[in-house]
Image 1 (cartoon, rainbow, N blue to C red):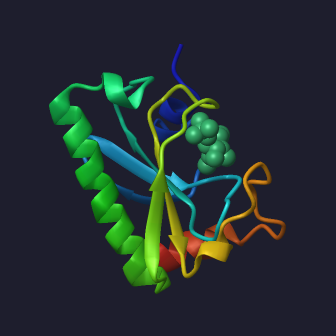
Image 2 (cartoon, rainbow, N blue to C red):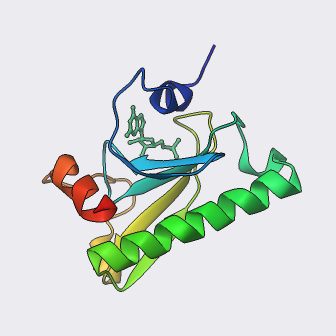
Length: 128
Ligand code: 5GP
């Protein structure tokens, strides 16, 4: 059975796409921790990051670098932080988190922004 992220890539579930290439796809997280919270995923299904073969692992990180630079450029943030968790969705994804200061992060255990940003407007800003 395809993962929820494979369904997003296939267009069966809507998303706010910000970038893609032949093998990777990037879209705004539906429950952002910070404004511009983006997930970068391989189009091929892999459950666990460190089980990926070296070429796929390296290519995913290069894709994440491209998207991080795009976010920094378009959103004008100080730095894009990153993390990989993967307990919720068993399809490898790198979280990219545009930030200006440490306090932009919610306290651990309270992930999620109180005020949800306008994802449509944000996706337009990043892709324009
Ligand atoms: P993790 O697996 O790293 O713990 O978290 C999965 C992430 O995927 C969460 O930040 C969650 O908000 C995001 N997510 C889960 N389902 C969807 C979805 O259908 N659309 C989008 N855009 N993000 C999702």
